[in-house]
Image (cartoon, rainbow, N blue to C red):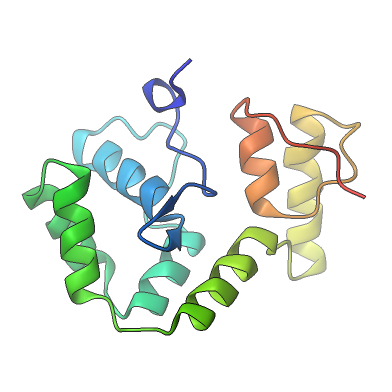
Amino acid sequence: MDLRTKFPRSMRVTVDGYVHLARMIDKCRAVLAGTEGEYIYPCPMDDRLMEFAGITAEQFTAAVRDNPTDPGVIQWFNRMAKPHTQAESEEWNRMMLSRGPTTPEKQVSFNKYRDAVDPSRTDLTSWADLQDLEEGRTVPQRA
């Protein structure tokens, strides 16, 4: 099953060295088409990627609107993104994929979302894992 027919791509999909970029493109396209449903663009995860790249939501939205294909958006993104070393990009990607709730209130929300999908998955600690679980992707048991 192609999850993009129902959901944005996983945050884990890496495009030109960036996790979350493919998902952000999908969500922006859905907002532009008026089909985003419960998805939010720009969300805090989108904001983190745009801040890391040094671009704004307005710029990104215009680029997605003006480029009907992923390669066009990705080419624009690579042209506009502030440069980072490979080590900086890898560290940022690790942070994004392992990022979990940062306050007690966000932990309560995280637990509520997780429990609505699968209360047995108390091993999950990252938003990336929770998104994948919620969207029907296989998420390995965590230690």
